[in-house]
Length: 258
Ligand SMILES: C[S@@+](CC[C@H](N)C(=O)[O-])C[C@H]1O[C@@H](n2cnc3c(N)ncnc32)[C@H](O)[C@@H]1O
Image (tube, rainbow, N blue to C red; front, top):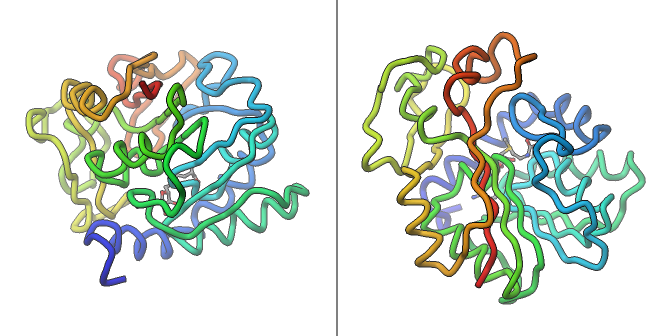
């Protein structure tokens, strides 16, 4: 524990405590076709995952309950799934057994420093895992190292505008108020927050993401600012549907290693 960066240690503690609340969602999504984000947009409408992963080696960075790994496995990939929380991995292992999948490698560890050789994966994915809980200046170069030239990284998480419009105490929905500076956005500490999510998250201004990708050696294939669908209602996590129909609450990046 002492060797872990402070945010990784804190997020491990938080996610081990929080894991029971993710069991039901994990069960539902293991049984589902691929769908993305807080509004559950089907992959058919928001195509982020290749339909054919036959013969590909894939890594999920921050796999949680493991449903994205299951989807990649069903599409033909050999999957290595790493997560920082033993409790989340316990759910993933149980669900894998219940779904008759015994060949996903579930690994406890930090996605900023993965114990795998250089250029050993064709595809890397993170849905709200490393994508928001790891320092981009650590995990994006690590994902690049792990991929073969031409390999693809897809990640999905909060849009920086939603982070800026989130109340600092975490005690109110995302709103039409710029609560924190956009410039300089990086570590977002929720440890004093009164409600979900807690822990320490990360995000960057869009230009900083772009500069990081270029410096590390990724080309941008696509960038999607996710709009809540017309059918969305109520609030998911801190995002009200009516806000997320007008402003992007989520983002998805597709990158290719040069
Ligand atoms: C919201 S879940 C996302 C995963 C998955 N899509 C799900 O919903 O079950 C976030 C996950 O990121 C993991 N995580 C946080 N920091 C991490 C790190 N440094 N390395 C690997 N996983 C990490 C947490 O343990 C948690 O399981």
